[in-house]
Length: 354
Image: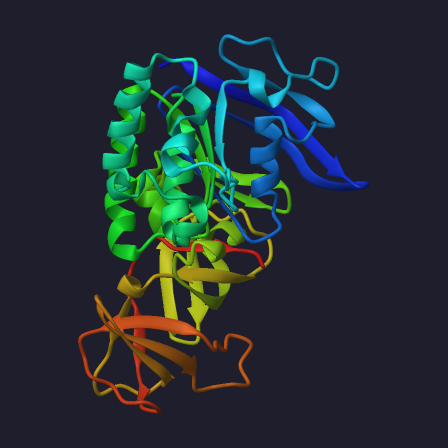
């Protein structure tokens, strides 16, 4: 694998406020990295800094084949061989779709331009729109033109800010798979910002979760979802429900977990000194117990592809272990306001201080 981009200790400040702090990561040619995190965490600022529209305050960027980019050795955006798709698309209003797409490849022969144009308009379902102007297109169509224009020069690295947000749901998944195949074929790396974690699983090889200008965790989507390293990561990705838990060490690493749904034990070492923690509880860790004393009440019901999703609250509101927003999937038909008994199945618990 050839390393295409490495970022070391990158810091950015705007108007005296630190936006990015100690950003360090690398990606290889052909890698696709999804940046996720709450609004204002620095995702778009990171893209703009990599592209060269914002100057770093500290740290360096290394793009394969180019001199290191530092605070003393800057480099203009047009020299970085990076393509970027902006949130507002930034199409030229006076140019047709065809001219917009071919704008960055005007130095190629006409035959090469037409070959790339034909491939991209077919890939992005723009074949019937090449003679139209941007104001004659819908938001989703404009977004697809912006994607085509960015891909046409075949940059080493493609930066995308919410690239699929305005595209029809039925076309979105098909487009993501087609774009992923094309990027892999051309060995183009990509970094994209999204608020939709489902897009990361479909489109990306890796996920980086940002919080307050820092990368909290980076890895494959499966790895991060199975082993989140912090409360912020698990909470943003909505990996389960949070249940207050009192942890007590019994002996030989065995710990007792006391919750509003009962007590269970696990042979696991915890790094948290505070006995009061938050247990990340996934629906598959819960079971419905018949003919037992109720401990929860149904506060909301939603029908999903996985069956009925129930939102539950504990019956004992006065307990320090009380909960208000526990989610549970079941094929059983429950009613709003019904009191039930839930138990926790044996599993390796994930707990976090919060």
